[in-house]
Image (cartoon, rainbow, N blue to C red; front, side):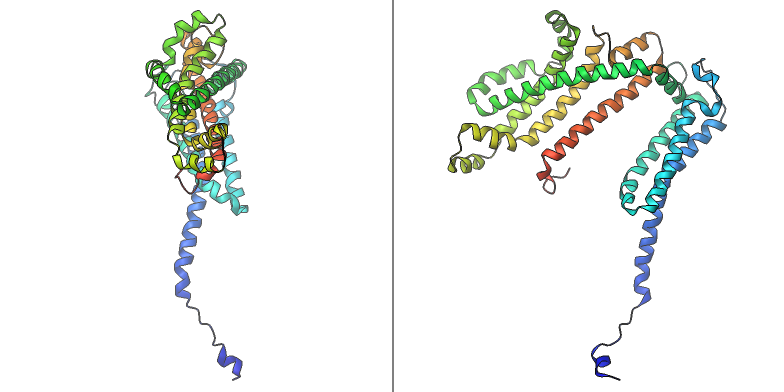
Length: 352
């Protein structure tokens, strides 16, 4: 035996010690595979229930009746989701970087497909929720396709009205919030006005807006701006008024003036409060938008909703509601992205 063998003894590994780690890795792999395939399983189950269970609702005639059963909008949607889910599961197996994303989103997609299946079963298949108030998903999708041009135009006009009112409300709220938060005299006179006017819902001013503005678009913009202005003003005022005094003392020591203190110290420090006001204002603008479009406006999702409700076309009413949900959720998601980009320094300090 050489001197080198005496200095470096052989390493003995115990296979029993690595078995728990292997079992844990296998368990995690199985869970990841189950999560990746869950949307496909849910879509296949919903498609099977739709195709093989008999219909108990007496469905009205639509343009989709000329198509075969497999070419109706709902089974086509489920088949598309099934194929997409299988492709996504295969992609996760080929590219491990996609697995965390799939593990997070796959159960949500599966839950959405289960919801579609339950909607179809409780309406069309078992008739537990009768027509015309509770149409099935196939009727809703058919109505959405039938009025696609009107719905597209209504969505565009609603977006235009919403963004116009929201921009005006945010601008007015930031200006008034900064003035009231920084200047005590402005806050002295402004707070009583906020306490009197602010709690009144913006929808209560519909008759006044129709009198003051001859154009219905301007009236809707003013109502949405009023709904946004109050929460943005209050949260901006609170944020600026509660900035730690030490921030201003340090800036003054370095020779900062009033403009620098306001726009480089107070406003950035109050941004968390400002974004809370922006979120609250966006939620209030959604409600005000729908009400504003039902009074005097001749286009938009709210107008379409009231129009179809008057004709008892509840399938198209649900189609408009689905578009509203996607429309409003997308805008809220964009605002969350903006918040994450502006307030990236909060990560690790505040739980998001």
